[in-house]
Amino acid sequence: MMSLSQTSMTKPPSALQPFQVRQAMVALKLGPADEKILEYLDFFTREIPTGAAYFLHVLPKFDLLNTMMEREAQALISNYEINDEVITRMERKIRSRLTDDQTIHIEFDVKEGNPLEELLEDTNDVKADLVVIGQESGVTQHGILAKNLARKAQCNALIIPNKAKARIQKILVPVDFSEHSIKALRTAVALNMELFEPAEITCLNIYEIPNLSVYKIQKTKEQFREMLEKDHRGAFDAFLNTHIPEYKDQIKIELICREGPGIAQYIMEYAENNKADLIVMGAKGHSQVELLLMGSVTEKLLATNEFIPTLIVK
Image 1 (spheres, rainbow, N blue to C red):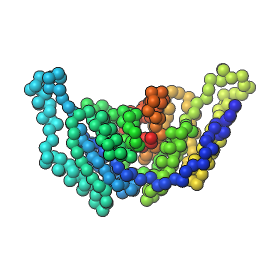
Image 2: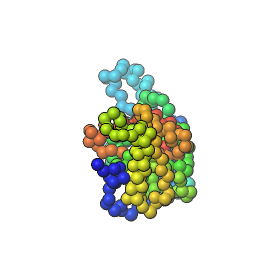
Image 3: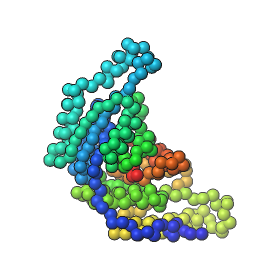
Image 4: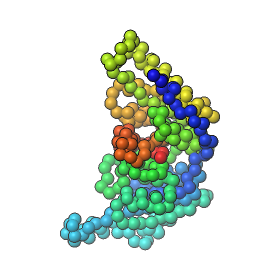
C-alpha cells in the first residue's frame, strides 16, 4: 500500500504567475449590504491588479397573472422600481469608491429576472474570471446564496460576508491533497505575491482515524494516531515540494485529527480561532458526482461563514 506522501503528483508545476483579475462581475442589491462589498473591493483592487469591474443588480420578475392580484403585485413591484436617477447615483458611488487613483474600467447595469441566472449569464458573456457577491447574516428573501454561486459559477468566486474586515494578513487554505487543493494553494500563493504586505499562509488538513476494528494491527489508538500524523506530514512535504517548491518555506502546516462529524465545522473553528482574513478553497467540477462531493464541505462552510471572505477556486 502506498502512503499519502507517495501519492502526490510528480508532474513539474508550471511557473507561478502573480494573481490578477482581468474582469470582475459583482452582484449588488442597491441597499445597505452593498457598503461592505464596495469597502472590501476598494481594498482588494488596490492590492490586486484589476482591469475591469461590471456591477449588476437584478430585479425579481413578477408574474402578475399567476402569483397574486394585480394591485398587490403592483404594490410589491413599486418597492423595486429603479429610475435613472438611482442608477446614476449608484454608479457615481461605485466610481468614487473604486476609481480614485485607480484605472479600473467600471460598468453598472440593472436587469430583471432570476438573480443567480442573470448573474451567471452575464459572467459568461463578459468572460469574467472572478464573480463577487455579498453574504448577509441570516436568510434573505431576494438574493443569491453563496453555495449556489460556488456550485454553478465557471470562474473563481469571491464571497464577502457582511461582517468581513477589509484586510488580508492571514490566508487559510484547507487541503486534501487533491487536484482542487493544488489549484487553491497555488492561487493563494499567487495572490500573496501581489499584496503590499505578504500574508501568512496556512495549509490545513483535517483527517480522521479509521475504525481500528477492521484492521488487524497490534497498535493502540494513540500509536495509530501518531502513525497517521507522520504519514500526513510526509504527504504535506511532498505536496509542497511538488507544487510550490520555491514557496514551500512560506507555508505553515497544520493538521487536525477529526473525531466528530463535520469537516466544515473544523475548518471554520480553526479559521475563527486563528483570525484568518481569507479562506481559499478548491471547488469540484460540474458533474453530478463532483457536485455532491463538493457540497459536503464547501457549501456547509459557506452557509455558516459570517466573518471571513472566501475565494472559491475553479
